[in-house]
Length: 114
Image 1 (tube, rainbow, N blue to C red):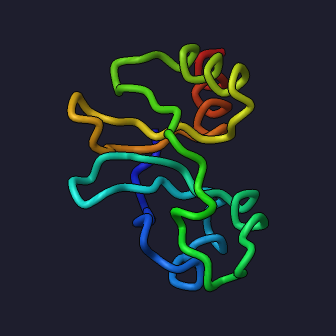
Image 2: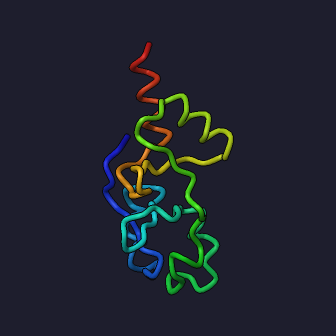
């Protein structure tokens, strides 16, 4: 699991979070209680009808496909394949964001098992 370096709020304009895509390919979207309500990716950004003046809420994928931290690497890999997604927000019992698992995290974990 990776630490959260960036996240977005649904009311933010894309221009406010666009620079994050220099480092990551997707961001978790959280509400005011830090609950993960969606994911915003480069693919979602391409759907923005108003360009960078669109809000994150207008283009994010919701609801978020998430897992809790007690799940295994295999659970995450299966969920990614089943849902054709590249990242999974990790949440606590209150659905609050605590981390993110990416395909790279999965590959690194599997490589370490060999």
